[in-house]
Amino acid sequence: MAKNIRFEKVYSQGTMNVMEIWVDKETGVNYVFHASGYAGGMTTLLDRDGKPIISPIVNR
Image (cartoon, one colour):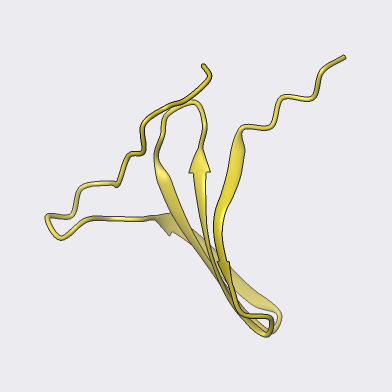
């Protein structure tokens, strides 16, 4: 059975204070993830107008 991985990490920075950008391969929506120590959170990545950043979907 093939493993369907929906999210892809496209950017990563840091070790203790981690900042990552993830892309949903089905919708193209970008998410930002930030973790510091034992705490972390994820939210949509927005442009200056407050709209979600959407990447082109490749290999659908």
